[in-house]
Image (cartoon, rainbow, N blue to C red; front, side):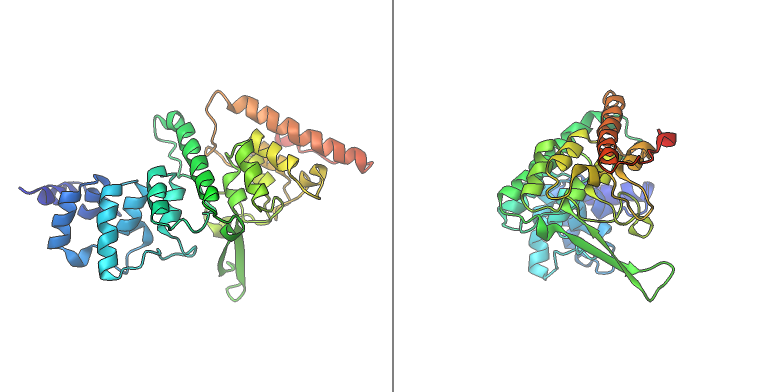
Length: 318
């Protein structure tokens, strides 16, 4: 039995939605068997109707499988296959590598001089069922920061990273809705003080309104600020960076900005808006929550004093 036949048998014995012998080969970074697959099934490598998630280039990039990725890129180039993945965000392979914090793959693309823009979504897809999730989490965050800094060093534009997503309104199909995502808003959930400050210094609008965090865009809350996101994830260092680099808007006014649901950043912090998808180790959570609430409440009190009126605090949510 050849290696290719072994992969085909493995898939037949345990077929899963979205999987295939090709995907198993890519995930194993098996170059020799990939060549055999291409020779036997040349028409099955790049299927135009396939969703971006099933695209072999997507799989190799997302899983940091550089050896098979090089083979697929050469094949795509010789067959005139576009490297831009279909989807509402016009996703590039660099975007996919950044999303997964795949440092080696990002560096590979950078060497190919394709690091032309800064992806606004440098996050991973958390899997709460993973036993060692908290162990590798900090390494994941560190790699994300290194990727961001590397792209900035290479001249990536923070302003160019602002992205709009348009789709018909759920209630009024004729009226399109436009949602915006920014680099700062996507990174501030776990960005360090230094990184958040640098993004702002590089041109990120600290007060930009965008769609909410998590879930499908259709159900997302709009008019969310970076401070809402940082507060929802109890990122104390990110909050401090935003408040220290607030520009002409006073910090006391920042903490009172509301999303379309009427919530201020303190509500996001108190409601645990991120549910279980936070970026903290278990022994950090309690102190980070307390520090987050204290920071926000102090700013609200300063605002209430300056305005000579009390602002109702959501103590019922604490």
